Image (tube, rainbow, N blue to C red; front, top):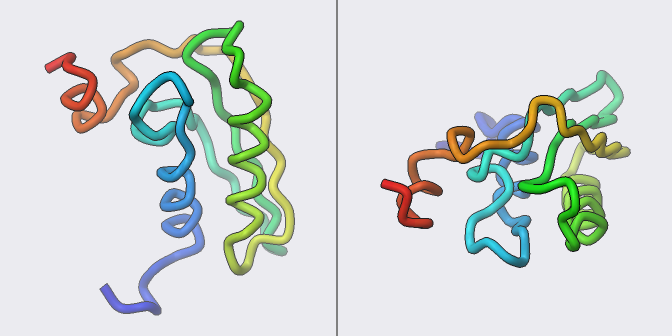
Amino acid sequence: MSETTITLRDQIEGVLRTVYDPEIPVNIFDLGLVYEIKIGDRGEVKITMTLTAPACPAAGEIIHDVQQKVEGVEGVVDCHVQLTFDPPWTKDMMSEEAKLELGFL
């Protein structure tokens, strides 16, 4: 894949794959915690995501990590993370790779 074919969305998804819930050895993207990525015309990004549990003790750390890493992508001027629990997260939202990694397959 050449440098010119990598989109801003691809780059954002790539950095989201480097964010982990400290209790689970799988990244938040493959866990299915990222529900939506909206990219505005000026490089403003809004990410709607959830956590594996509403009382997740690492919530603040995960959200901060997402915001910091996405804002570090060239072309992104701002990142707003919206946390939601609707719909609630389930194991069915995980990628096949995540299910395999965690022994669900």
